[in-house]
Image (cartoon, rainbow, N blue to C red):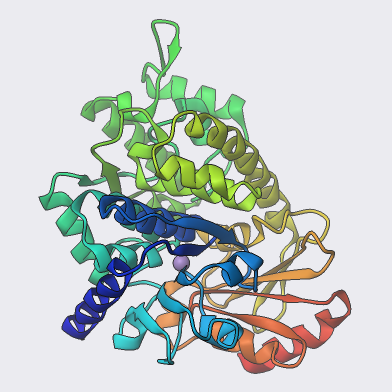
Length: 438
Ligand SMILES: [Mn+2]
């Protein structure tokens, strides 16, 4: 029901255009930051003042008490959590989590028969609300940040608009991380999606591998990056990688090398912001290292923000790489699901990403995986991930997790990725419940 969804988006825009000084409350992940910034930019375009608040978890804050108008972005369950304290205020929700209609006006494609896990992100929804042509880049960054690729359905519609308006380009190319920003040696050695056996994590092997391909990966005293290679060199590199992976028995990983890449044509060449995947990873790094305001400043194009974000990104990539190495030799098979105990070894900010990465070569995609880590308060953070195939077969992780947590904590999310937080002593109970819920 696309037309009904669009009608609802227009209705939400109308309401927001009547606001005088709203508070934007957005989630801290890449999609939440991109979506919150997209709303901020749209308000600027309309000459409306605003303030912003980024939260990890939806909870009541004094800023909400002081605001007469609120826009919640990328949070499921706003009405359930805050309905009472929001009474008498003007509130709208822009979201894509599983949800039902309530009293608060919501732009949420889930209500119109679209899957928020794969067909549109919060950023995409925010774009559909305002439809300002130049904001389409953030819509795609959010979708990619929420692992919605290749882009289909509403995401595809948004992509097409971006291409028509000359803001975005869609190429089929090597789609591993760092095409813009990483010198080739580290482009390969930091590649965790897919995992490249013998290359990931081994700078020396990557150096030797590149030397054998005959590609000049160093020119005029400078390390070259993937986007600087010409078409012939790209093909040379891709063929060498495919042959190498097959020789290592990693044919599955080879299949993942090529895919759609989304190039944000208005951003400078060689910048992380030119590639939707790198842009979203940059935002993720800011959010997960408790500096969401830097991510927002990046989205708003403020000076100096990208340098600060880059420092966080490097730390994030390091945690990912180390987490990945630990995960590969330490996950367990619990029958109905795989289990990754990252407590004390993997940061809670990256446990979900690491768990998901195991599907990129280490794990068959035959059942979901549950990763756990300690959060800042010493509680257990749970991140569950599934594959597209499992979801197509009827699996709904969000539901299974919320069922498993019903008496011990809060959990939920999408059918393909979901999360929860529980007390330390509730782990066994959770694992039993979760197995049953599956
Ligand atoms: Mn989201």
